[in-house]
Image (cartoon, rainbow over all chains, first blue to last red):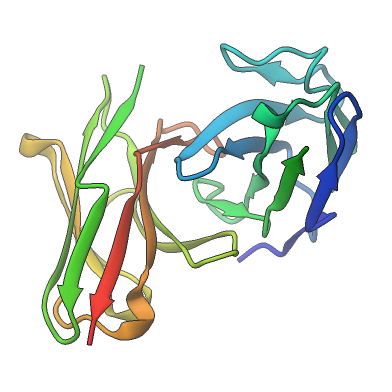
Length: 115
Length: 114
């Protein structure tokens, strides 16, 4: 399985500020994914981070609110901008792992509380 | 568009009893199917998956699931629940493009009673 790490593991932030979450994969991957898990709910895909191109956002998520960087094949960042209490969630990154690439492996998540 | 329905947001079982978590999906083409488990304050761990071949798949921790195309189902079972099985379980699907995004069901929280 892939080893995926995220930083920070948790944070408490003030409304109106921004937080950047880092995701590191132990091998090169073409696509990385960012998900949000709101309290007591399931996971919702925010965007797909492609190396060398703009991220692809799902309906309801916009680049101004969730800018994503993908500088190389093992790393990505997600920024939660101008935060409000409604952004309090767990943010998870994932990546497919060889050989078949059909299986997504997840990082441990970043637990964000916005006051 | 794909969708996943998990019947029952909470399931309570006695230790040693059968665990049955239901998952039905909607997809225009046969998808890849997954079950993930999330323990408190942790990320998601893959339990098992179906991509092709044998429709009964075995995973970690004694879990198994059967893909039934005619019923568009992928129910998860474990013959005998253990206290350590208390967690949230998510069924997910992706289309048959390698490395593609997942669509998750709503999740089922399992409580195991001693």
